[in-house]
Length: 577
Image (cartoon, rainbow, N blue to C red; front, side):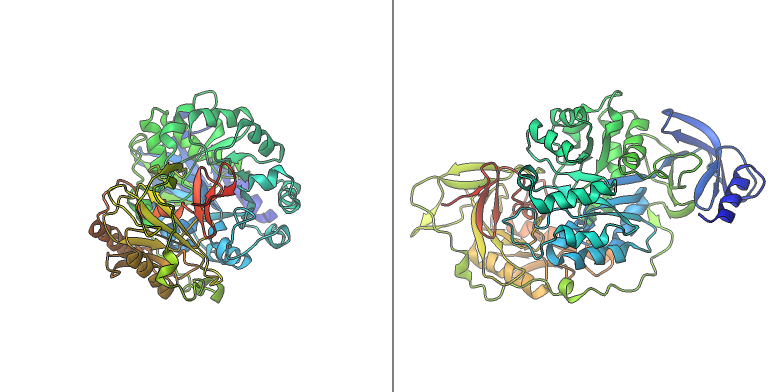
């Protein structure tokens, strides 16, 4: 800060110069002393400068409302909203989220460094404060076939970017455990700069938590039980309680939170679809769930603000006090938590659930590596054939609704002439993972249960984290039609009827992950896609596209499907029928 600006701020704090804004008649959430205090607040240059009345150019009467720190999403993949950062900001800011810790590893798996650069550039001039974590595992595991490989030397040029905060989720635990040279270089790069490093400890033992902590990794968002949470807190980690579109771990994990350890818990959405963000909310929704679960409102607010800021070294965020950025929310109920007004650096950003001003950013211009990223080449329908032994048990992927983990089942299934035939009575559907980055023709074919379609198929180019085409259905013609349509769209989602007629679609032309259209148009198309699911008999209480998109991630137990076939995550080996 220039000395003259510093002098003006000090003078304003002392009452010798006018502040920019004075807020009166507010009940302020003091997240340090854990109390509600009625006070006046002065703001200068986007920061709080005084908690007493000062002369100001403008006065805002809070009319007895609660003034609380705005929220921080401690771990989110913006790409999972299926819109660009600018459109994402328009949706989450009205929900009181003014800062996000974003990991662009979805688009990095498609386009490598160009994907990271795109996300940084698209986030630069937003009201939303987007801090990036550099993807540590592209691909997610050494044997994966993503669209790019990012080594330590590829990440190094981004490390000193002002909006780069640290190293994103380390999920390749075999590489960490064996001391892989490139993994160690990435971690050393972050540690040497005192950067935070995120973990990804899905299903790992307490001994592996020790390994992660010894490497300097401080967070984990893959916690699914209270016991796992306590194990991590015991070892000095921050637990990121997650509630997204598929992984909905908050009800179980929040049981671990007490008055003694609450400061080690923060909140994140990880992956959440646009329509759910718009209607249900973002971190504000998690705060409400915490309160409904019995967490004291100020504790829940603290978890969503100060705790996250301290975890990531954001020294000017997370509290209502002099020296902190004036990012705050006005609400009239600390339990129901309606987000009435949202301020970013002392300026009103949203009111009544809507942004006050629209973005004036130029239209998205994506590089060819992002706008033309779906290549499967010639892909005949017979490529979907799955040979199975007659009258024998075969491996089947069992979904667990709203969980990333799956179960490995050994079951007998329908076969004709040695080929698997989907059976809706057994809920045995065909699952396909089709390579889409290099038109190699590779496709893994498997059997899944839990979707309970009665006809047709769905397909998408969102498949964490390598983002090949994933498709599931009751009939090869429908599965094939949906796959081919995604290549024509250059990415997206598609629903096909039994005969192969496309019932609905959502184009996602940026990396096969995001739309270049306004969020309202994307939501409209999403609603058409969801409505069409009724035509194929889908009635389950979870989003099938979200569940489908995680069935290719071979670092989350127990069994997944990659383009090279079925993968047993626990045994860390491929399976055969």
